[in-house]
Every structure is written in C-alpha cells, then in structure tokens.
Image (cartoon, rainbow, N blue to C red):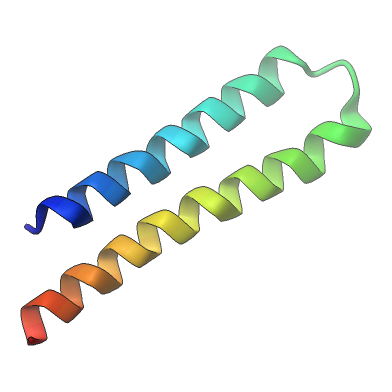
Length: 61
C-alpha cells in the first residue's frame, strides 16, 4: 500500500480517537460535545476516505 495512504489512514484514526476521548473526558457540557464529536468524526472520516481514494487512484495510474 502507498505510504501516503497509510499515513492518512493513521492520521484520520488518531483524530477520531483523540476527539472521542476528549468528548468522553469533558462530558459535563452535553450541548457543546455532540457537535464537536460529530465534527471530529467527520474530519477523521474525510482523511480516511481521502486515503482510500488516493490508494485507488495510484493503482489506476
């Protein structure tokens, strides 16, 4: 697998993991945590999806 793809997958996973841990630790204000959690999961998923598409593009080129 392409090293850039692996790096992007790892970065996306770390962003998601740290965001979930942050939201669990600071669970007192539920109003701010839910949009923050959704945003963190979306950003991490975008990194991982980009990595998968990058890997597919490299295979086709």
